[in-house]
Every structure is written in structure tokens, then in C-alpha cells.
Image 1: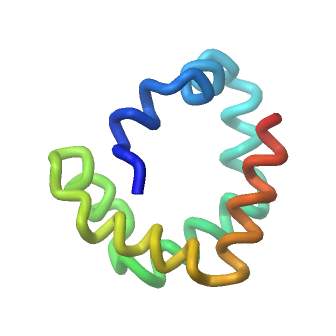
Image 2: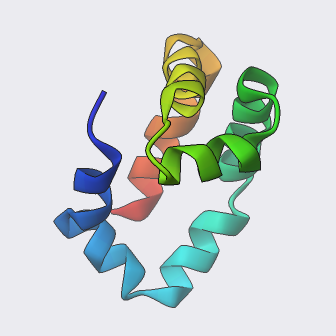
Image 3: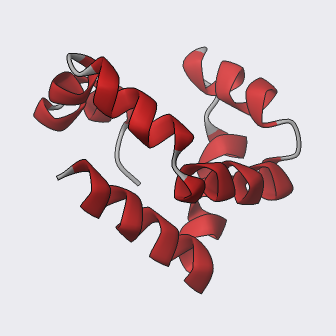
Length: 86
């Protein structure tokens, strides 16, 4: 699993952060909403898991993401989100 700090500092994330319209499009996409729903099912309180990850305890969030990626629906949703960002 990639390091979250590295992902946030990557070129793709930098480009996305400079494009508010693209961020809104990603946020509002049905695929994104479904991914968050699936992550919430896995992680429980997703906001709390994300806060803990930001403080260095990413175990719960990473576990939920791994579970999402093993799920055929989750993997397809992630792929669709990637395609929409290009």
C-alpha cells in the first residue's frame, strides 16, 4: 500500500489540487459517493479513521482501502474514478 504522504505530494495530486472544477467533479461523481459508502461499511466511522490516518495511525483506513480493492465492485469504481481524472 503506498504511503499516503507520497500520494498527496505526487504530481497527480498536485494537478488535481490546482483544479477546483475537477475536484468538485470528482467529489460529486456517483462513483466517489459509492466508494465512500463502501469505505464507511468497512471502516465504520470513516471520518474518524481519516483523522487517525492524518495523525499517523492509518491501520483502520488502510484496512478499509485494502478491502475495497479486493471487492470487484470497489476495484471497478476506483478504476472508473481514475479514468474520469484523465
